Image (cartoon, rainbow, N blue to C red; front, side, top):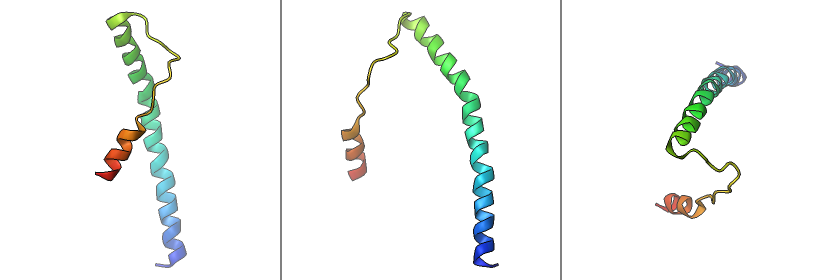
Length: 66
């Protein structure tokens, strides 16, 4: 098999697999989001929509070193 032909097959394979995974995730996102918001309303009613949450960068650095 030629090098160019092999890369063409790999490229086509990646293009066909990636959108399928993304479509599956996007299809489930609406359901998961609605379920999460429903549970939050049941637990306490009000929930903040515009609060900035600190990203745990230090924890990721510790995990990377481990």
